[in-house]
Length: 88
Length: 202
Image: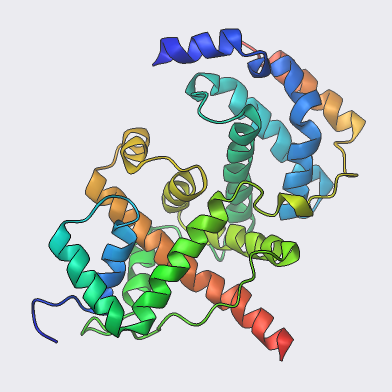
Protein backbone atom coordinates (compact mmCIF):
# COMPACT_ATOMS: atom_id res chain seq x y z
CA UNK A 1 0.00 0.00 0.00
CA UNK A 2 1.29 3.45 -0.81
CA UNK A 3 2.65 5.47 2.05
CA UNK A 4 0.00 8.15 1.63
CA UNK A 5 -2.79 5.68 2.14
CA UNK A 6 -4.09 4.67 5.55
CA UNK A 7 -3.79 1.07 6.63
CA UNK A 8 -6.53 -0.74 8.59
CA UNK A 9 -5.09 0.23 11.96
CA UNK A 10 -4.94 3.90 11.01
CA UNK A 11 -8.40 3.79 9.50
CA UNK A 12 -10.05 2.14 12.49
CA UNK A 13 -8.47 4.63 14.89
CA UNK A 14 -9.69 7.52 12.75
CA UNK A 15 -13.11 6.01 12.25
CA UNK A 16 -13.46 6.07 16.02
CA UNK A 17 -12.06 9.60 16.17
CA UNK A 18 -14.55 10.76 13.55
CA UNK A 19 -17.29 9.85 16.02
CA UNK A 20 -15.93 12.47 18.40
CA UNK A 21 -14.97 15.37 16.18
CA UNK A 22 -14.84 16.35 12.54
CA UNK A 23 -11.71 15.14 10.78
CA UNK A 24 -9.90 17.20 8.13
CA UNK A 25 -11.25 16.73 4.61
CA UNK A 26 -8.22 14.88 3.24
CA UNK A 27 -8.43 12.36 6.08
CA UNK A 28 -12.13 11.81 5.45
CA UNK A 29 -11.37 11.18 1.81
CA UNK A 30 -8.60 8.71 2.56
CA UNK A 31 -10.86 6.89 5.01
CA UNK A 32 -13.66 6.73 2.46
CA UNK A 33 -11.33 5.31 -0.17
CA UNK A 34 -10.08 2.69 2.22
CA UNK A 35 -13.59 1.74 3.30
CA UNK A 36 -14.60 1.18 -0.32
CA UNK A 37 -11.95 -1.50 -0.57
CA UNK A 38 -11.96 -3.00 2.91
CA UNK A 39 -14.90 -4.95 4.27
CA UNK A 40 -13.36 -5.43 7.71
CA UNK A 41 -12.90 -1.73 8.36
CA UNK A 42 -16.39 -1.10 7.00
CA UNK A 43 -17.67 -3.67 9.46
CA UNK A 44 -15.65 -2.10 12.27
CA UNK A 45 -17.19 1.29 11.55
CA UNK A 46 -20.67 -0.13 11.28
CA UNK A 47 -20.33 -1.96 14.58
CA UNK A 48 -19.02 1.05 16.48
CA UNK A 49 -21.98 3.06 15.21
CA UNK A 50 -24.34 0.24 16.15
CA UNK A 51 -22.85 0.14 19.61
CA UNK A 52 -23.41 3.87 20.00
CA UNK A 53 -26.94 3.65 18.71
CA UNK A 54 -27.62 0.87 21.11
CA UNK A 55 -26.11 2.63 24.11
CA UNK A 56 -28.05 5.80 23.40
CA UNK A 57 -31.40 4.34 22.51
CA UNK A 58 -33.76 5.64 25.18
CA UNK A 59 -35.27 2.35 26.11
CA UNK A 60 -32.06 0.31 25.95
CA UNK A 61 -33.82 -2.89 26.83
CA UNK A 62 -35.80 -1.18 29.58
CA UNK A 63 -38.88 -2.85 28.19
CA UNK A 64 -37.42 -6.05 29.47
CA UNK A 65 -37.60 -4.86 33.06
CA UNK A 66 -40.20 -6.65 35.10
CA UNK A 67 -42.76 -4.10 36.31
CA UNK A 68 -43.87 -6.35 39.13
CA UNK A 69 -40.47 -6.13 40.80
CA UNK A 70 -40.52 -3.50 43.53
CA UNK A 71 -38.00 -2.30 46.07
CA UNK A 72 -38.75 -4.27 49.25
CA UNK A 73 -40.31 -2.12 52.03
CA UNK A 74 -37.46 -2.64 54.50
CA UNK A 75 -34.87 -1.62 51.90
CA UNK A 76 -37.00 1.37 50.99
CA UNK A 77 -37.08 2.50 54.60
CA UNK A 78 -33.36 1.88 55.07
CA UNK A 79 -32.49 3.92 51.98
CA UNK A 80 -34.80 6.70 53.08
CA UNK A 81 -33.05 6.85 56.46
CA UNK A 82 -29.64 6.78 54.82
CA UNK A 83 -30.58 9.69 52.61
CA UNK A 84 -31.99 11.62 55.53
CA UNK A 85 -28.95 11.11 57.73
CA UNK A 86 -26.52 12.15 55.05
CA UNK A 87 -28.49 15.14 53.82
CA UNK A 88 -26.46 18.31 54.12
CA UNK B 1 -22.55 27.22 36.24
CA UNK B 2 -22.99 26.41 39.92
CA UNK B 3 -25.46 29.20 40.25
CA UNK B 4 -27.51 27.83 37.38
CA UNK B 5 -27.66 24.35 38.82
CA UNK B 6 -28.62 25.72 42.22
CA UNK B 7 -31.45 27.56 40.60
CA UNK B 8 -32.56 24.38 38.91
CA UNK B 9 -32.51 22.44 42.14
CA UNK B 10 -34.41 25.20 43.87
CA UNK B 11 -37.13 25.23 41.25
CA UNK B 12 -37.19 21.58 40.29
CA UNK B 13 -39.14 19.59 42.85
CA UNK B 14 -37.78 16.38 41.36
CA UNK B 15 -34.42 17.29 42.78
CA UNK B 16 -35.82 16.98 46.27
CA UNK B 17 -34.11 13.83 47.60
CA UNK B 18 -37.03 13.22 49.94
CA UNK B 19 -39.17 12.18 47.00
CA UNK B 20 -36.55 10.12 45.17
CA UNK B 21 -37.08 6.79 46.86
CA UNK B 22 -40.80 6.82 46.15
CA UNK B 23 -40.45 8.13 42.61
CA UNK B 24 -37.47 6.21 41.30
CA UNK B 25 -36.70 3.49 43.85
CA UNK B 26 -38.64 0.72 42.13
CA UNK B 27 -37.35 1.57 38.69
CA UNK B 28 -33.70 1.70 39.74
CA UNK B 29 -34.06 -1.50 41.73
CA UNK B 30 -35.56 -3.24 38.69
CA UNK B 31 -32.79 -1.93 36.50
CA UNK B 32 -30.07 -3.11 38.91
CA UNK B 33 -31.68 -6.51 39.36
CA UNK B 34 -31.81 -7.03 35.61
CA UNK B 35 -28.04 -6.49 35.38
CA UNK B 36 -26.70 -8.21 38.47
CA UNK B 37 -27.71 -11.16 40.59
CA UNK B 38 -28.88 -10.80 44.17
CA UNK B 39 -31.53 -8.63 45.76
CA UNK B 40 -29.26 -7.42 48.55
CA UNK B 41 -26.65 -6.23 46.06
CA UNK B 42 -29.31 -4.49 43.99
CA UNK B 43 -30.66 -2.75 47.10
CA UNK B 44 -27.15 -1.60 48.04
CA UNK B 45 -26.50 -0.28 44.55
CA UNK B 46 -29.75 1.69 44.60
CA UNK B 47 -28.82 3.16 47.97
CA UNK B 48 -25.32 4.06 46.75
CA UNK B 49 -26.85 5.66 43.67
CA UNK B 50 -29.14 7.86 45.72
CA UNK B 51 -26.31 8.85 48.06
CA UNK B 52 -24.00 9.67 45.17
CA UNK B 53 -26.80 11.70 43.59
CA UNK B 54 -27.39 13.53 46.84
CA UNK B 55 -23.76 14.56 47.09
CA UNK B 56 -23.46 15.28 43.39
CA UNK B 57 -26.68 17.25 43.02
CA UNK B 58 -24.78 20.30 41.89
CA UNK B 59 -23.43 18.43 38.90
CA UNK B 60 -26.94 17.79 37.63
CA UNK B 61 -27.25 20.21 34.78
CA UNK B 62 -30.85 19.69 33.92
CA UNK B 63 -30.02 18.49 30.39
CA UNK B 64 -31.72 15.19 31.09
CA UNK B 65 -34.52 14.06 33.33
CA UNK B 66 -33.79 13.16 36.93
CA UNK B 67 -34.60 9.56 36.07
CA UNK B 68 -32.01 9.48 33.28
CA UNK B 69 -29.49 11.15 35.53
CA UNK B 70 -30.05 8.64 38.35
CA UNK B 71 -29.91 5.74 35.89
CA UNK B 72 -26.58 6.98 34.58
CA UNK B 73 -25.16 7.01 38.11
CA UNK B 74 -26.53 3.51 38.69
CA UNK B 75 -24.88 2.22 35.50
CA UNK B 76 -21.48 3.39 36.75
CA UNK B 77 -22.18 1.72 40.11
CA UNK B 78 -23.10 -1.54 38.37
CA UNK B 79 -19.90 -1.55 36.32
CA UNK B 80 -17.83 -0.74 39.42
CA UNK B 81 -19.52 -3.53 41.32
CA UNK B 82 -18.94 -6.06 38.53
CA UNK B 83 -15.32 -4.97 38.28
CA UNK B 84 -14.75 -5.58 41.99
CA UNK B 85 -16.54 -8.90 41.81
CA UNK B 86 -14.55 -10.16 38.84
CA UNK B 87 -11.21 -8.95 40.10
CA UNK B 88 -9.29 -11.65 38.29
CA UNK B 89 -10.74 -10.69 34.90
CA UNK B 90 -10.55 -6.94 35.24
CA UNK B 91 -7.59 -5.24 33.68
CA UNK B 92 -5.94 -2.76 35.99
CA UNK B 93 -3.85 -0.67 33.72
CA UNK B 94 -4.52 1.02 30.46
CA UNK B 95 -1.27 -0.31 28.95
CA UNK B 96 -2.70 -3.82 28.93
CA UNK B 97 -5.74 -2.65 27.00
CA UNK B 98 -3.45 -0.81 24.60
CA UNK B 99 -1.51 -4.02 24.00
CA UNK B 100 -4.70 -6.01 23.48
CA UNK B 101 -5.98 -3.51 20.95
CA UNK B 102 -2.59 -3.37 19.19
CA UNK B 103 -2.79 -7.13 18.97
CA UNK B 104 -5.82 -6.89 16.70
CA UNK B 105 -3.47 -5.84 13.89
CA UNK B 106 -0.35 -7.15 12.20
CA UNK B 107 2.76 -4.98 12.31
CA UNK B 108 1.91 -3.90 8.79
CA UNK B 109 -1.35 -2.38 10.10
CA UNK B 110 -3.69 -4.89 8.45
CA UNK B 111 -6.19 -6.85 10.54
CA UNK B 112 -4.89 -9.86 12.45
CA UNK B 113 -8.22 -10.42 14.24
CA UNK B 114 -10.69 -8.93 11.77
CA UNK B 115 -14.17 -7.92 12.95
CA UNK B 116 -16.66 -10.74 12.55
CA UNK B 117 -20.17 -10.53 11.29
CA UNK B 118 -22.79 -9.46 13.83
CA UNK B 119 -26.31 -10.73 13.70
CA UNK B 120 -28.04 -8.33 16.00
CA UNK B 121 -31.70 -7.66 15.62
CA UNK B 122 -32.27 -4.47 17.61
CA UNK B 123 -36.01 -5.03 17.55
CA UNK B 124 -35.78 -8.16 19.67
CA UNK B 125 -36.09 -7.06 23.25
CA UNK B 126 -34.61 -10.19 24.70
CA UNK B 127 -31.56 -9.91 22.48
CA UNK B 128 -31.21 -6.30 23.52
CA UNK B 129 -31.33 -7.34 27.13
CA UNK B 130 -28.69 -10.02 26.71
CA UNK B 131 -26.52 -7.74 24.63
CA UNK B 132 -26.76 -5.13 27.37
CA UNK B 133 -25.71 -7.58 30.04
CA UNK B 134 -22.71 -8.61 27.99
CA UNK B 135 -21.83 -4.98 27.45
CA UNK B 136 -21.84 -4.36 31.20
CA UNK B 137 -19.66 -7.41 31.73
CA UNK B 138 -17.23 -6.20 29.09
CA UNK B 139 -17.22 -2.68 30.53
CA UNK B 140 -16.29 -4.12 33.90
CA UNK B 141 -13.17 -5.69 32.37
CA UNK B 142 -11.86 -2.29 31.36
CA UNK B 143 -9.84 -0.13 33.75
CA UNK B 144 -12.19 2.29 35.54
CA UNK B 145 -11.00 5.32 33.65
CA UNK B 146 -11.63 3.80 30.24
CA UNK B 147 -15.07 2.46 31.05
CA UNK B 148 -15.97 5.83 32.52
CA UNK B 149 -14.89 7.69 29.39
CA UNK B 150 -16.86 5.28 27.22
CA UNK B 151 -20.02 5.53 29.31
CA UNK B 152 -19.90 9.31 29.53
CA UNK B 153 -19.52 9.59 25.78
CA UNK B 154 -21.61 6.76 24.38
CA UNK B 155 -24.29 6.29 26.99
CA UNK B 156 -24.65 9.77 28.41
CA UNK B 157 -23.75 11.56 25.21
CA UNK B 158 -21.35 14.09 26.71
CA UNK B 159 -19.10 15.91 24.23
CA UNK B 160 -15.41 15.09 24.37
CA UNK B 161 -14.88 18.65 25.54
CA UNK B 162 -17.09 18.03 28.57
CA UNK B 163 -15.29 14.75 29.21
CA UNK B 164 -11.92 16.49 29.02
CA UNK B 165 -13.06 18.98 31.63
CA UNK B 166 -14.53 16.34 33.88
CA UNK B 167 -11.56 13.98 33.78
CA UNK B 168 -8.75 16.46 33.19
CA UNK B 169 -7.43 14.93 29.98
CA UNK B 170 -6.51 16.51 26.65
CA UNK B 171 -8.77 16.18 23.60
CA UNK B 172 -6.24 13.98 21.82
CA UNK B 173 -5.99 11.80 24.88
CA UNK B 174 -9.76 11.45 25.12
CA UNK B 175 -10.02 10.38 21.46
CA UNK B 176 -7.32 7.75 21.97
CA UNK B 177 -9.00 6.49 25.15
CA UNK B 178 -12.34 6.27 23.37
CA UNK B 179 -10.80 4.42 20.45
CA UNK B 180 -9.23 1.84 22.76
CA UNK B 181 -12.38 1.41 24.80
CA UNK B 182 -14.53 0.98 21.69
CA UNK B 183 -12.14 -1.39 19.97
CA UNK B 184 -11.80 -3.48 23.13
CA UNK B 185 -15.54 -3.59 23.80
CA UNK B 186 -16.32 -4.41 20.19
CA UNK B 187 -14.06 -7.42 20.38
CA UNK B 188 -15.28 -8.43 23.84
CA UNK B 189 -18.92 -8.33 22.72
CA UNK B 190 -18.06 -10.37 19.68
CA UNK B 191 -16.33 -13.00 21.79
CA UNK B 192 -18.94 -13.33 24.53
CA UNK B 193 -22.17 -12.58 22.82
CA UNK B 194 -22.11 -13.15 19.10
CA UNK B 195 -20.11 -16.33 19.21
CA UNK B 196 -22.39 -17.77 21.87
CA UNK B 197 -25.57 -16.94 20.06
CA UNK B 198 -24.19 -18.27 16.81
CA UNK B 199 -23.33 -21.59 18.41
CA UNK B 200 -26.75 -21.81 19.98
CA UNK B 201 -28.41 -21.16 16.67
CA UNK B 202 -26.55 -23.88 14.92
